[in-house]
Image (cartoon, rainbow, N blue to C red):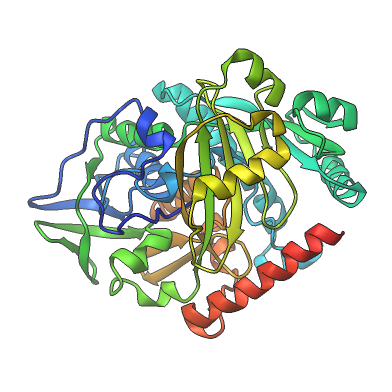
Length: 443
């Protein structure tokens, strides 16, 4: 999941999350206070932006990245930390239909990108020795036979496509051993997915880009963009002239710089989700909750997702909604959900709470496009962005290096604006979410 904190949008500090409290690298980056010239200017210091910066700086491009607050301040530094594959899997249809709509080879390309995005993280963490508590092992849990059938169908599809990582089905008793709860009837383990201290990952990748020559700037809100053969990106204290510009602000772009790319804001809506982190559980209690240290997710629309941190806290998230109304108490609301899953945690103290908005597109497919011949954008990960953001960075880098095949596939996807604009679109999505919540409970 990805979030926008309910704290002030122009706050210069990270949300008061477990990630911010436990991050290893708390040293700031500089603020842009001069006029510079580079090959590529990236707007947005989340995972999309820093992944793009790594790809391009490794390829020898002069890169400047501008972040309005701190690197990883928004979605990328406060999400659930689950590393999940998939890229464009919401483009439902047969192989022939996908090929006809998006071009020859598109079906295989979409499938391959869905797992390449995870491998980028695996390889980059190893290459740059990024300390981020990376763990492998992910469990999708089912609550009934319908959900079991869906997960078993996915398992078969992975086999048919010769997925190389270990995937295995757990019956009820084994699921109960792995997840100390009576709520689940089965589950699918995928050892190719995992979890991570996501703010450490984002900050570590920014340092990796910097080590390759990228210039990383914080507290550098973009106030204007002048188009042309050479673009000029302006901040309050400086400017960047660049041959290419990449807009990677996701849901924050329209909130922080509303006049920068107004066309993009109609195609993305914020949906709320929240996370709490308990006090350290100790070995015995942690073992009773999650014996295999997997990240876990259920199959509901308004899902629960949870995992253990490196110091054995339970991070428990969920409560997705489109109402834009925060609960009176995140801790009270999320604790009630946590206790339904893990009644043994009643009485355990919650030490951190945070939450906010994830960027949602109508078709749940990442949005790629051009605003001009040399200004590109990517946004709308719909709650599954930790790994796909890395694929986005690679695709944008390929495009700038005149390898447009994969960008062209993604850019062909139609992304309709939300009907009624942001205000009424949010209300319609809230009604839709209510329907799916009811369906999840009765089926």
